[in-house]
Amino acid sequence: MEKLVIHGGNRLSGEVEISGAKNAAVAIIPATLLAQDVCRIENIPNISDVSCMVRILSQMGAQVKYINKHTLEINTKTVNSYIVHHEMTKQLRASYYLIGALLGRFCRAKVALPGGCNFGVRPIDLHIRGFELLGARTNSEGGMINAAADHLTGSAIYMDKVSVGATINIMLAAVKARGLTIIENAAKEPHIVDLANFLNSMGADVRGAGTDVIKIHGVSEMHGCTYSIIPDQIEAGTYMVAAAATGGDVLVKNVIPKHLESISAKLIECGVRVTEYDDALRIQSDGKFRKCNIKTMPHPGFPTDMQPQMAVLLTVANGTSIVSEGVWDNRFKYIEQLLRMGANVQVDGTIAVFQGVEELMGAPVRADDLRAGAAMIIAGLMARGTTEVEDIVYIDRGYEDYVEKFRELGADIYRKQIRDDSAKPATAG
Ligand code: EPZ
Image (cartoon, rainbow, N blue to C red; front, side):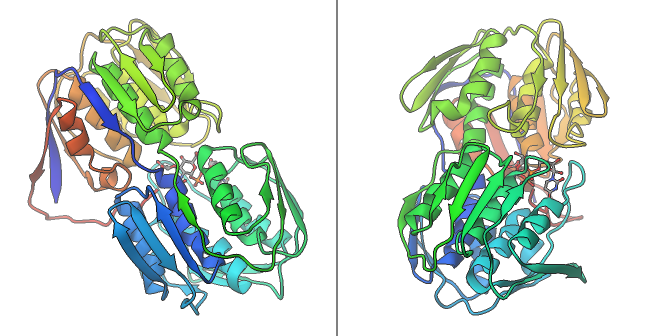
């Protein structure tokens, strides 16, 4: 086991290169099951969520090889089973995308449900309802989801709630269904658009991704392709906030500024200077922040996956800031760790009220989940003194080479081995 040791107070400066998007990669890799052909995927992030998904596909019989650190070649021609057991899916929540992909490939899927998560209940009723509207019969027994259809038929599907995962899973099943599928009230995140572009590169016919109505004309055959994954919106936002929080001056490179508009807007509202280039953003701050209110919403609203990171900056903003979590029921667990560092925050359900304090003080804290872990790093970078972060296996899931990237920007941060007495597998979110 390892922990992070962070000596706070250094202003970050220099340049950081953003990696490929985790939440696009974990959808695109299972999507290769839809073509019995070779798919070459570039700009793959080197993170444990991706290596989990790669391992699962290999265990299912796919031929998977890394051409280099960021390029995967996958051929699923040799996959001949639609069953995925618990020991494979428990490592990664997004393994449920295999249900949609296997339904699209075999009209059958028997996939063990992954573990829960650290910020509230994570049902998949909208996924199941979508599969049933496409003609699949479903049931769940012994922790496995069974889905089967003689064939899948396109359908009109209105999403009762905006759901990234359900939108993705329905797309994966619908691309080879007979006829037209219309997904209304669809999620519009950048990774939904990236998946649609990947599927269309394989010969699918997906239109409207990025709007709330996605139309899919089913095709009978799909083929391999070469595709490059978009930059990670949340990784980029994390470095933007870290640069601001430390009063730094950082050029965040290899980004799509449009994906970061809501984050840039909130940083500017707090008094941070954001300069936009074609594929980069420059973040400059004096380390003093105006208060501001955040309400997390589905894209293009402020992303829930940036809520913990932005909250850290609000702990030292001048005045009272309110954060309202509009997506998850219980995504303020990390506040307990910030209170240990001297923050003044009151949480009531999905609302947190921040009274700005002079500064945070370093303390031993832990990562409750992936984005909470990123928030602990930002808190440690801006705090006075030393912060140690435990359970960093969560952070390794979604941030490529983050210690090296932060050190490159001047952070005093390093990994330290600790005895591993109570190892527990981290279920990825
Ligand atoms: C994806 O999770 C992301 N994970 C999450 O990012 C992100 O927080 C979330 O989308 C929202 O943007 C991946 O992409 C792998 P949802 P997902 O379905 O798909 C409810 C990270 O840090 N809901 O959009 O599981 C649900 O409870 C992770 O990278 C149902 O009620 O999220 C939630 O309240 C953490 N029934 C809301 O919808 C369903 O069938 C949105 O969830 C599905 C979801």
